[in-house]
Image 1 (cartoon, chains in turn cyan, purple):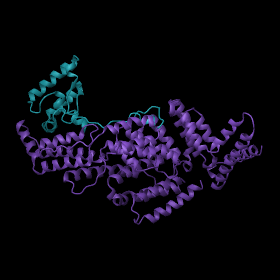
Image 2: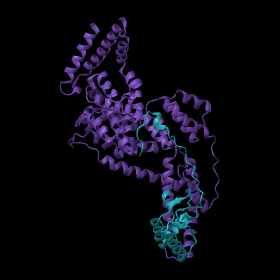
Image 3: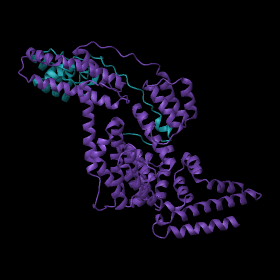
Image 4: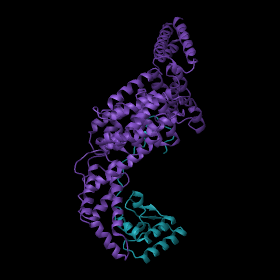
Length: 110
Length: 481
């Protein structure tokens, strides 16, 4: 399990609760695909435990495919119950001037 | 007149020696003599010119500065950032005895000078500047400056992963001048602090040359990680004495804004709480001390022992009317948790403790086997025995730098497992050192292999005698290069 997987939890991508029925899952997925197709602003992002993330069609299709497999669905259910904002990002601050402090004013991009 | 004559005479000798094939073939005694004689000649010239009346004092002063080349290059030329000057002066002011390595030092200094203002750093110009490093493909001449120059070029290309291992190698090589080692350490510290990886800052600050920059960054990292709340007065004093004060002020402010340790919340003994704690550990840049990882592991151990996870999976399978392998799904979640614990344990500052929960021991084993696999793959690529040389200096020291970095990481994480690690890979690495020494005549790298293995092992280890004698041979050979 990585942070990326937690952020892309299918239930959170589809914006539904882990107790949603199969029908509700399909409906939510199709509704989101339609909204994304017309560029609806409300469908562009979804909530995760680490804050909002951008949503696109491939992510929605992936989420639908995962929830059709019962084993994957139960694993997703487990992590989907982490409430949004329950794991707030508390990043340690970066020292942005670090390269300049060693006299490095050239490109510094990984 | 006498001084000028002497100077011309010495420069002529240098020219003649430099054209006698490889300059590395010059005996160290001649090199030392020439170096000292050159400085004396320059000093005499400087004093004669200074003693004369008229506007020649500037010339005299310049000659006097040439007597202390490192001071001039590192104190004046590199900070000025004038393109071309650092390269030319490094070549002119240093004796030819270290041969092609002199080119590498010139390239490194020139790169550092250009980086001061970000001038002339396009691909074509860098390629042209790096051309003299090709001479370093005669591996016998490549040392710390060559490695550091290559690392800088990698970093400029955005290949930070390779740059890090090369900088680490150059920082710890014995055949690296102090100014190169300090530069490499400063780069590594800056890189870690820029990524907010203060655990790495701490790890680096225990190694390499002891500098004021290192002390300042270590104190800031300790405060940011809430390991030790240094007083503002101490941090201020360290900042005042460290180089790069203007930029360092930002880090000082960050460290001072970190006031006290957040109290660890006492989670409930439940599956939901265990899950939320695991999610907490995954939060981007979250501060995960080993204490916190251990607390999460204990919570999970309780959940697993009580069978709560399995019961939950079973109940959900019934709820959604699915025919699934309950144990397989529970095991999948457990593996995910072990993965989270392993990642966070590896990234947390070391703080050994006894009686770790089983689930954390599994996570630690996970880290160990992952590292083992990585090292095994890399070590198997090291050349040994009768394998022929391909004459590619760069390949050799790049591969060794990666192996060295991983082995250092392993030793830092598992200090009690060094012997086991040595038993698995030590012989092959040792043979690679011998191969570098005998087949490639790469004495400085061979020496580094032996020295690294020697520091890796306990002082009483049976292989120490062999390593020490190999070190002596390699050091003697390197001195004669």
